[in-house]
Length: 136
Ligand code: UDP
Ligand code: MG
Image 1 (cartoon, rainbow, N blue to C red):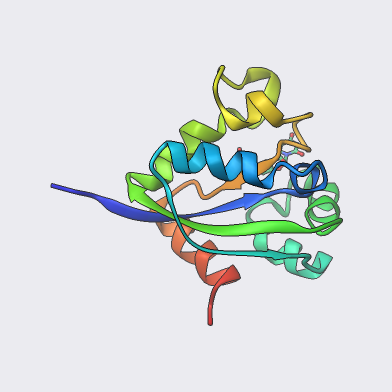
Image 2: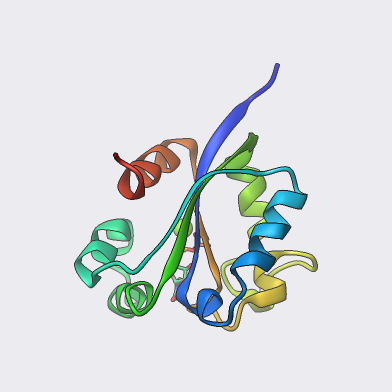
């Protein structure tokens, strides 16, 4: 049985600023992800606060929202078999120093906050996050 899923991926400001969009897209494509839609945008802090609402009680919430809205990002709908978990695996651990070899964060992440990519953590959240960026 095939299990084609979609997930939301974001190339975060630190990576866009360093011109890593194409290198990261190539890593995704080489693992079989189709990029169904993509857009490069800069969001308002208030929008970042909505996007990361699940983290609103965390100490890092304010800095995280300032950071995500600090420069252009690339939001993408990715599709493949088991896209949600496979993207999390390709991203690597939240803190790049814990990320396994060959992962995006191991290769490009700078620090736990500037970790180059976001990826939905469940099929349910993927639907919400895709709708957040691509509702039209
Ligand atoms: N983050 C941070 N400090 C922390 C934990 C998380 O700045 O101690 C940031 C980091 O950019 C991370 C984001 O908050 O990507 C969301 O955290 P989450 O735990 O959901 O990690 P992710 O799903 O991105 O791996
Ligand atoms: Mg998360």
